[in-house]
Length: 49
Ligand SMILES: [Ca+2]
Ligand SMILES: [Ca+2]
Image (tube, rainbow, N blue to C red):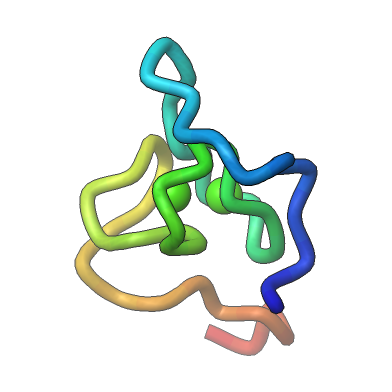
């Protein structure tokens, strides 16, 4: 399972935020491309660019 604050429901009113860990809108995908603050790439988790 993904680390998430979700309880098994899609939160339609929520927006995915690119925070690296959580499925903010509970759609089953974490930090999907197009999420708020994200590019089409995965977050650079270690910050080395
Ligand atoms: Ca999501
Ligand atoms: Ca997120």
